[in-house]
Length: 227
Image 1 (tube, rainbow, N blue to C red):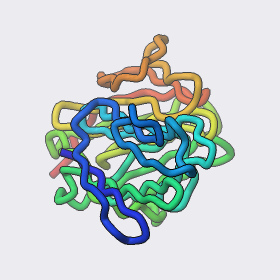
Image 2 (cartoon, rainbow, N blue to C red):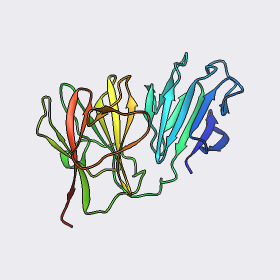
Image 3 (cartoon, helix red, strand yellow):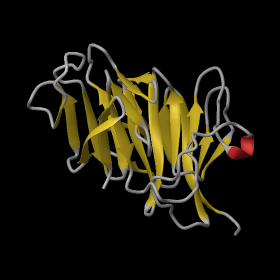
């Protein structure tokens, strides 16, 4: 089970398993994790668990929520991420932290497409896989159908691929034992699959689904690769 390690100034204060679907953090006593400090808002942040995915969301706090030193509004937590709330630190530990060596990928739609992939020579997040993979010889693919990069194909061989335009709309596709799932992460507009807007729940992708994220259309399909 994923868990959080609460510390301040290097001193571990508490270890908390993420047993609930939604865990709230804040100064008020009704929060699941109460931090009684004036730098923490009454309802500061929330952690939402959707199957194997864990999301951190800032609840419009006064002083902001940071992950690994960067301010975030909504963030997919990876093993060993450090959430910073004032002087307090919450280290996220995934139950899958001892897993394989797969990396995560990020694809940004905008003036350019950046693919964090070892094959492309780009830096990766360095995090281990957080979910088990489907059959090794079946890999999901995304082909971009519109925009500047129309025709480009992306292999979804990693445990988690981030798609979209930061600050506008971001979604993640996770590779799980029973298929590929897309989940909304950032933005007021949700991803569209086959003309239907998704909700906050993870949605399983099927062959030839048409996905639209940040104004870019793409097609999902699976492909058998040689061993």
